[in-house]
Amino acid sequence: MAKKVILAVAGAGKTYHICHEIDPTKKNLILAYTHENIHNIQKELCNAHGCVPELTTVMTFDAFVYHNLILPYEPSIANHFSAPRFTSRGICLTDPPPQRIKNENGEMVYNPLYRKKDKLTHYVTKKRQYYCATLSELALQVKEGRDSLIKRAAARLNMFYDYVLIDEFQDFREFDYELIIKLAKYLDDILLVGDYYQHSVSARNNSGKPFKTPKGDVSYADFVECVKNAGFEVDTTTLSKSRRCSADVCNYISSKLEIGITSTNDHEGQVIWADNIANDVLSNEQITKLVYSEATKYSFPALNWSYSKGDTVDCACVILTKDFEKLAEDKFSIKKISISTLNKLYVAMTRSRGDLYLIKSSTFKKLQDAYIKE
Image 1 (cartoon, rainbow, N blue to C red):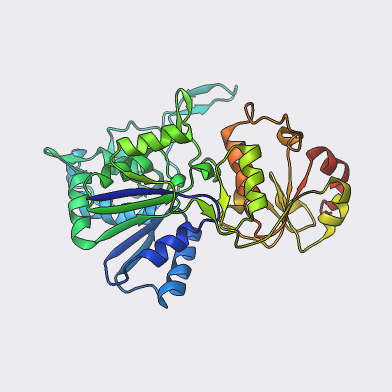
Image 2 (cartoon, one colour):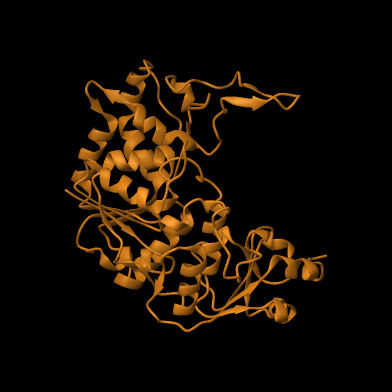
C-alpha cells in the first residue's frame, strides 16, 4: 500500500505535478476541495494529455463523499439510525441548525432546532435531503456489525480505482480531514499534495484539526510528524521550489516570514518598496494590487489576499496591514502575528511571476480615498 504526502511551496506546480505524473492508462480518481480547483485540474489534464483521460475521474470532495460513501450505503445508514424506511431525496447546501444561537439579549443559548449526532435528523433535513456540510461526519459515524462504512467503501474504491490523488490537501479540515486519513488506511494507493503555509486562508474550513488544536496552532514540524504517524511517507523536496516566483521574492519571504521557499529561477523579479512612488504604482493598471479585504471597493484592479490563492499575475503590489508596518526593518518579528494572517500575506506575496511591490499601511491610508469607487 502506497501512501504519500507531497508538501509543496506556492507556485511549485501542485496541480501540474498531479496531472502530468499520472498514468493515463490507469484508473485515476483526482479530488479537490473547490469547483475552481476542479476546473484547473481538468484544464491541466487537457494540456498534459490532450483531453481528460478516459479512465481518469475528477470531482470535488463533497461530490465524492456523496456518490461513493453515502448513496451506495444508504440502507446501512438507515439501519444504523434505526430508520429502516428512510430514503433520501438528494442533497442541500443549507447549513444544519447550530447547537447554540444568540437570543434577543445577545446571549448564547441552546438551539431547540438542533439535533444530536446520534440522530439521523442531525444529517438530513425534514425533506430528507442530506446536509452537504455533514456528509463526512455521517460517513464516519456509520457501522454495520464490526465493519465501518469507511472500510467497506475503501474496499469498493480499490476495485474501481488504481490511484486516488487529492490536490490542495491543506484545504481539508475536521471531519473531511479525518475521513481522508481513515480512508487512506485501507486504500491501495493514495497521494496528497498541498502547501502547509496556505492553510487557514480560504473563506471556510479555517479552524480545527489538523492545523489547530485546543492547545493552539500546529507547527510545520508537528504537522509533518502527525502525517507520518498516520502512515504516510512525507516528501518535502519534489515541490520545494517555486516555478512562479523569482529568487529575490522567495528569499525575501523566507527571510521575513520565516517560510522556507526557494525558486527555480524561471522568472526575474525584484522586491520593491513603493512608498515613494505609491501613486504611480496604484494608478498603473498593469500592476495587480492585493489588499487584505474589500478589493471590489477600489478603482484599481485588485484582489483580496486570501481570494488570490491559485492566481498568477505578471506584476503585483501588496498593500500591507498595520501588522507589517515594520516589515522592511531588520528588527521585524512575526512572533505576535497570527498564523492565519501570515499565511494570507504569504499567499499574496507569491502571486507575481515578476516584480513584487510593497506599500505600507500608513502610506496607503493617506492615499486610499482617491481610489475608492464613487
